[in-house]
Image (cartoon, rainbow, N blue to C red; front, side):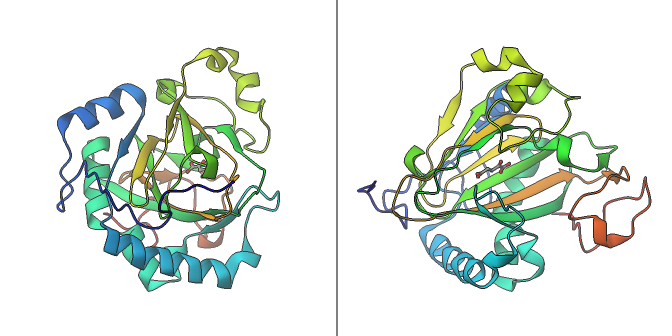
Length: 265
Ligand SMILES: O=C(O)CCC(=O)C(=O)O
């Protein structure tokens, strides 16, 4: 389908954040209550243009290396380690400042990833939590910033969240290609109200790593470019389990996740 409004730049920019990364107290309250919050106008239009160009270039050059083979999206992980322009996005100080206000503690980068949904991809990303995938211990909090680099209305694959599920720990990792997996583990979640946040280019959402979430399929004629920066408690240690980010690093259980791979923000 065709989405008629601008798909590149938020031309009637609404900003919930100033250039230094200060946000109103009520957004912190929303994040604490729901485990998710939308922050509009995180990136200025000039920044969106630069980062989208970098994201498109990188995607064209590397899409064959996608970790996802199910056709849900192109998933390219730790792009900031390979591309200087994208490093400026992942390490963006304004975004990190907001993340630390929400988390209420010093943070490090865990990893980033680019998630591109091709036009008419016909595949939602089904409900899951993030934290069960990760080889972390000694962590008090972790959260993702989902950055829209094009306008992402529901028709192009924006995210929906299960508010309050940030308190649900201890589930095994869920399969994001299986619609029923999370609900099979926790049937009561099916009846929670869901929050869907359409995003203009440059808007973001932050969700905790336990907040259940999904993304719709892309039914439009344009690709959905999202860049996700994942932050973890600066005290996080490695629990010894396999993960694509830590597998090459030769870590021992209980090692700190620090150094240049996991910089403080
Ligand atoms: O954008 C998507 O399709 C899913 C994103 C997601 O699950 C996440 O950012 O944790």
